[in-house]
Length: 463
Image 1 (cartoon, helix red, strand yellow):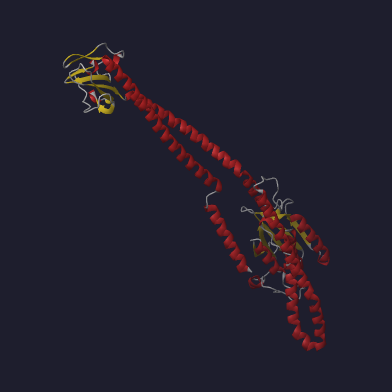
Image 2: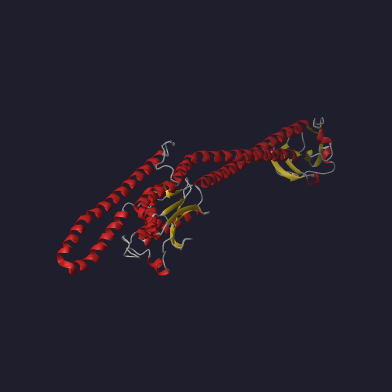
């Protein structure tokens, strides 16, 4: 049984360790949502920026084509190889030196806008008359230019004329940069808003689960036995399943305890008949059978007691106040041992409680106090304090003869009686030790200030 409990404790500890190291569900949901938001906004931003840049570039090319048509409309050849612009273009930037707005006519000789000063734009090469050729080029002072060229031919002209209009790209690139900057800020604000929305959604969405966890935690503290039904529809199947399992566990535990008790009690009658028949074998036969009968009786008594012990922990535990239980037991023992005139002191706060079942606490205090009354000369003291770790330390002391080191080593052995002249089965301390172990507590022996025995037991405290 101790091995099973140790294995269960190790399994629970491993589970808690894995539970602490594993990421939370809310964190997973938030992280996944944030990753998808970042990817979605990134892809959306890329395509929006690309689409805007293409739209601006197309609009810019349309403006270039319009300027080119204006230059073509004003182009004239007044003599072979002599070109002219009949009237100046309206945009004054074509007249400002190196303004970034240029036009050029090429037909053997070159006629260019004043803004080009003494610089020629590179020729476009072979162009089909009437076709538009767009290109990028480096202009004066390493300006980044976007140019459109075409070739015009009239019947009375000696040769075709290549017309080129070039404008710096700084303007539309500035627009593109401003748009991208605004786009990044807008998508950033949108991303923050969506992130906050995701956190709120996950928080509100998981709040019912946190309520379930809070109720389970309260059950571990001894407040309540079942999960409530005030949860969203999606959580109710979990609540139903847990409460059904809870009912099943309690029913199974109750049935097992009842059957174990019935079995033990059922064996007492045939055992009594066996003891009576042993008398028929005379003194010699009776003495030979008595040890075996007594051992069977002690085992039955032990399991009768154990069948009532649940070792309630976790969701089976409730708050059990120490003082009322101790007071009832002490009152009964004072009447039972009235001839010894024992003075009993209870030093336990009224609100001090443990997590467990009242039957288990009664079994622990009953055995410890009965032993104390049995061996005490004149006084018994029971006290309890809450330790820094949250456990309750329970002390039962007497002013009797106490135990030697050898007796302490054997006191917890099953059915061990330290003095055959005192009535008892020798099972009390063994039963207490088993119950305390079920509660993950500890039991040890010490010497009381009055010189007798002090038994110290630790049990889980109730908040």
